[in-house]
Image (tube, rainbow, N blue to C red; front, side, top):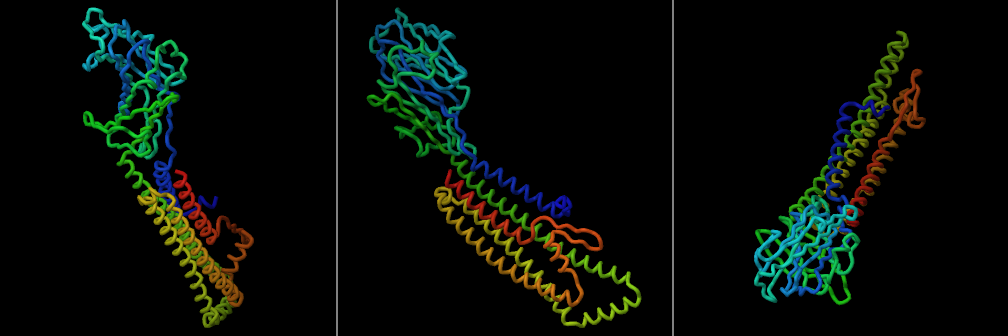
Length: 480
């Protein structure tokens, strides 16, 4: 309950410290929170009907628009029916078939001069449990249209997805994002699509090209696999092209396209810097009230001592007052009183030095941590931060040795003050000494209890906390 009795100014310091630490935590959380994973649960499978002469297959993926489009090219034959099917580990909101002839623009109408494009509702299936979708489209050429054997002909499916294609999203604000697409040739995780599957799958035996549209203001990172075969711009949008390699006996291929946002990368450094600044400010706010509280306690003890002496003088008889006045004059002229005052001043001086050094070293160390974290060198090589952690640890150790030395000198002054108080019949430091030893003190029948950390224990806690914080940050950087 003594904590609730703190003065308004101390409460202000604690509130400011809490706010700064909260802001620092929220800022650094944006940087160091783990990435978000939405890995697809299965592969993409593309296949065609029986006895079809397949030329190539092309996949167009628009990451920002959540759109996937498949297009399978054939050499026209005398076949009465053409069909393709698509199975993929994404939930599609809509599916729309199309066809092209001799590199014409896509045609989406069901009936045309070229033939009939069949896509009944039962040919579009969504499995919400597995998070997958499947579709099958059939095209029957018009027998009256003058097709020529060997002409280029394509069937395609266009899907709008319900969720994002981004599988890995690394903070802050998607600074690094990854799209993962796996293509598989023989089986699918979704057995409900078994009726769609017929003929030969395309991904193994025929050229398969994957085009990925990147989000704006991003660029492909070195984490991309396999290496892109081409970069190009279409419609003021950046694209990257891959050619999955299905070798003999290899039935699957994964394309992992990672891209970075330069603006978010810069914001990451800015966030680390401001996080370090707020940590330093919050630490300074914590040190200041502790210092002020100790000084106020000393002042309060002095005032209480003076008030106590006044009360004693009032209650004494005239003769006692006269004797005490004579004794007081004797003390005033005594060298012990002068030594007592000088020793008291030196003791207070050492206390101020300790807290001034603490405020400087804590704020300086936290500033070093903050500036080093926002350095591009540390961002690229986090292992270098271990050197910063070692340096801060050495600074704290030197601070500990200096603090211990000054505290020992202060203890010597306290011992001398106790000796002088016995000679002068004073009780100030005697009372404090007894209260520290017993945890309480009884004066005039009233019990005064002491609780909480001593001044030097607070400093030891700050030392320990500073070392722990810098090594935790070093561990987080090495882990990321």
